[in-house]
Image (cartoon, rainbow, N blue to C red):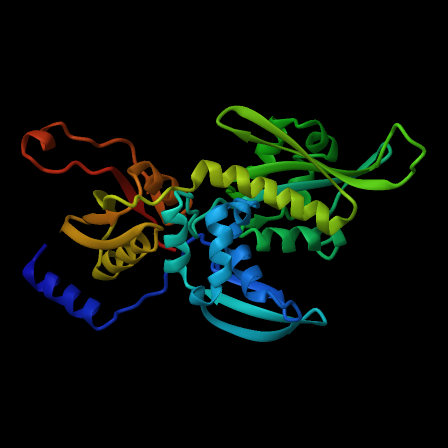
Length: 357
């Protein structure tokens, strides 16, 4: 990199140069909304955020976490009273650094803001009749959106337009015909695809109790295998809450990373198609947003390719898992050069191509 560019970059960074960053990320991950009437609203807020960040619905039952709920005031940065859907709600913003440190101290994995876009094909079955739930204002869809928002899961719903309906049918979703499901889903560029069917079932088939419960049966593909799950609940809200919690727990187990308490690693990431000073800074900011990353510096820059040095508390595979959900980075084929070891140069963990929006 030429000295003139180095000085320009330094000046811009010191002056707080900021650019719009477009990444697939969860907004307000460390924000909770609780009923204002609750006496323990602070504890509820911290518990809600801990569930969102860890993906573990029962995290508050762990002794160390339960003890920390008794001194929650240190975690709260600000709170605001709002009126929402006819109810008084307290919107609480918690300190991300403190929340992450609590999880780190207890060896609980942290799931950052970059999360997979989840596309859900939703079919309702009534007897032998099946139909897509296409109405965006349907109670089941409204409860689905609310549950996914609370679990911090990015949600995508199909358009169910002619392009969809000539490619996929309700029976394809119900039966799990993945060739048709994947073909119809290609246009949405989703990271996770779910085929879900909702119906009603008797609460107890062995008794005279005729009470009907909601049942959601769903499946998804993961590395060539099909994962099937079922949730049963008394009402639509509980059904979708159980669905979102179970999915969040599965995905967090796959993508969340434990922050190391002992050491900080230095990792090199190469990024291609960095053709301007603005690109150089945007990519640096995108990398800085990754959970567990404390510092990002430009190690080298030439011919539209930049190397970034990251100080991180998570392992390299955790970084790669997070970066795969940023739509502005495309992983390139392995470009490892053996001679780099002979020269004493640290090899890059991976090479990405920067995609501008």
